[in-house]
Image (cartoon, rainbow, N blue to C red; front, side):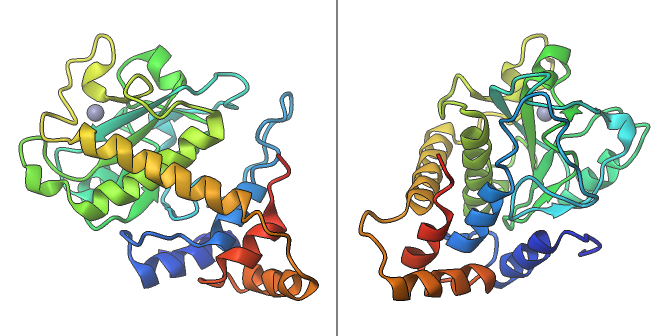
Length: 260
Ligand SMILES: [Zn+2]
């Protein structure tokens, strides 16, 4: 737990504990920080800054995978990202974390989502994770593992679907990936793979709409309400952002407006 020196992540981690992985709202302040921290993202030709323990998704906890299981890159500049690939671990959350830390394993995904909705990031989205068993698809994708077994539908909990959908929504927004089954695919759909995950019990008809809903909520928070703020509510908003306050959606959003 919190060995990270990244203060925004630390705050988010506390929030994640408080509200649990399945909570609907991540909170405006958290989203704002997530977005503001990414303003450099679309600036080509600049190696992106890296900080030990930093995560790409505000709700994730960082545990580094073995460097043998990924390749350093500078995505999306050197390789464009246009796919999210959904996996199922065929094991527990803990065992997945462990094998991704094992240099002999030869594979790892960017994220692992637990049955309880917790999310651990093990490889930066900047880098190419070895998760798809196909070099081209590794280079163009972000890989998300889900705790459980393909033949146990009960492993795919509400909390897992919700958390994963929020994560995928952010990834899609970051790289302008369409939220559809062409761009959000299962490992089984990667050309040349002999893997079957996420398997027949992964409910795509449920998952894709959940991603769309999460994306819509994010977009609404980022855009903010149409009414113009009064002086009073602006200072209130700043306070809410600093305190990573939960409520106050209205004010806090306006301070962030994401410049786009
Ligand atoms: Zn897989």
